[in-house]
Length: 94
Image (cartoon, rainbow, N blue to C red; front, side):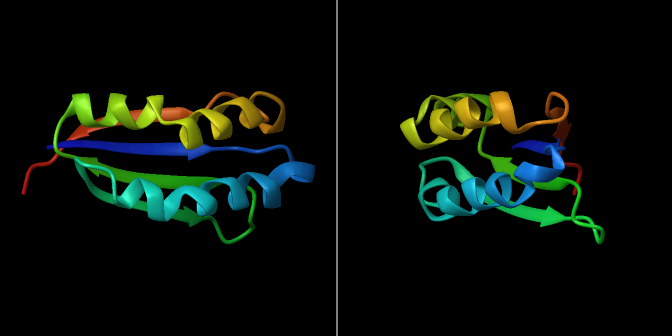
């Protein structure tokens, strides 16, 4: 299993748009072959978004990145983000 934790820091004026963009792809992503879990969270002061993802393997995640709806979010994030997304790849232990 391949797990990912992503921290997304949008510019303040784009926070709601950045959140809406991810929320708009939740169902499609969760129905992708290879997706085990895809959840979005925010911190209490609504300045960052956090994605927790579980995929059957790295290939399934890479295929997710190639989807048109995922690519649209990536393109929007080029101007919406304060800094690049911080992605931590993890191995599930139990």
